[in-house]
Image (cartoon, helix red, strand yellow):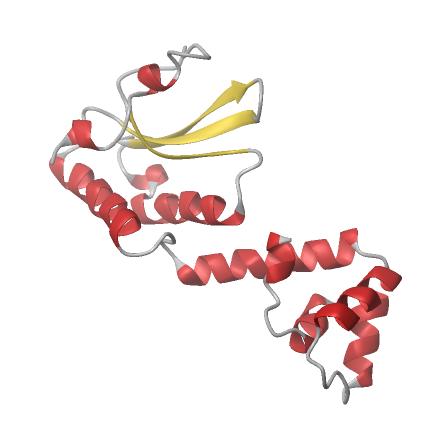
Length: 175
């Protein structure tokens, strides 16, 4: 496998519905995400960045943003044509892992991102009445015991307390 196996070039990806004016038309797209990407895509994008370290990799990797009429923007993680074979191989290995084994590059990062998203949704998108209703519908049947935590979950919007009452807390991020 070689450089051309990584993905389309920036220029190719913009051929149908956009124009590319950036400095890397021949760079290959490793991974992309847009404003409305789901948590798994956002996690993988960040995991690629963490693994490839574009800030300290001699400019072989970069993130470029394009505007898009439908999704607002698209961020592309790219690799330049002058990248050494070790950087190309590292990229191909990560892509193969993502394709062959599991759709998530970093389980710990995904778990952290799910927790943060659930906490934000719980605190900012649910009123106390909505929180009580959600817990009534989704909590373990034996919802009892720690009433201080229950009150904190409902009144203050504490996700760390609310998540203790739910069998699958991360469902909140996907509903």
